[in-house]
Image (cartoon, rainbow, N blue to C red; front, side):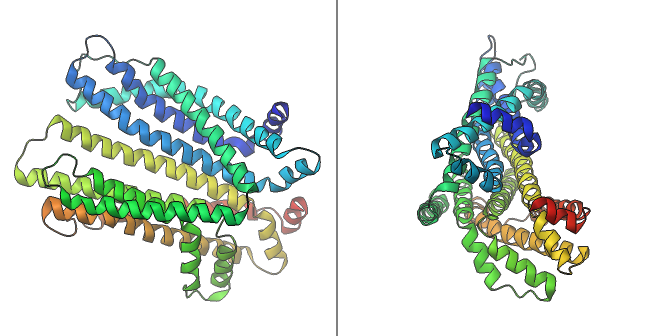
Length: 436
């Protein structure tokens, strides 16, 4: 099965490009920040600089590991779903489920290894640039030299390979398991995340305004609430569609398509919810913290500077990864519908009407993701703002939310429209014939 996996990659390299890109970015980020461990361990590094570097590597490295897994899992899930016919043919030819799993896992590990190796060079440059940024802000002594050692190299390769293997295994298992059992497990995890999120957000009121750990509990509450919403994404999408008053041919067809493909679109909606919740919550809470420090006249300590740097860095990483996941998933899902678009055109629909339907679908997905992501973010922002500033809502206005919403809308709607327009350039008869 390993040789079959290698031949599969060689015959259709474009299919694995999304996985390669996710592995490349993930390994690059993990190695970039874990190189700070190697730098902190160099002889002669002072304790303050060592603590700053170690904390940054720990926090961002943990987020990076989770994001690598989600990014690779998202691309592999779409890949496996689109290969359902091929995998079924292998089973009919005598392949066992275990052999199919080994083939898909072997493909994922091989592609992830290539991505990790390609990321070594950029990660070395990124680690040096990151150290320069810490030194320019006074958080790390200027005499500290960057080091890219075994911690960065081994962690980047190991985490990427394990994430790829685990994501591929789960993707194949999810495609072959019974739907009812899968739904029960997802529901249980979703409600568990919602319950823990409520407790975490409520525990914010047990802290005082000057506690260093004040931001942790509302941030975790917002993240866990967004995870719960993300796990319930198919139900949330169907519930919204049942109450959506869209009219016209494009609107009616868009709602029908979204309802029929709600399970397949759950990964895209999960990315939107997580992106909105984490970005909005982190940026607004950091803004409230900065305003409170400025109003009190207190001088920002090294720990406060580290916290701000980490928050902004985490948001930047999330933006990059979510955009990659959205673009990869939406491109693959839209390209896979080429036969459907061709049939619609043969039935009398114009290219403009097809694009209109796709645009409405992207708009609905974006709106639903922003709505529930904002609710999750507010669950963390409001308790933090009440404790830190004695007001209910932050004074930063809608600027941050509008910026986050613009990125999400551009990534979602822009990708589906550009991909659909590219697909529509092929004649309808040729599209239906080649996809049959």
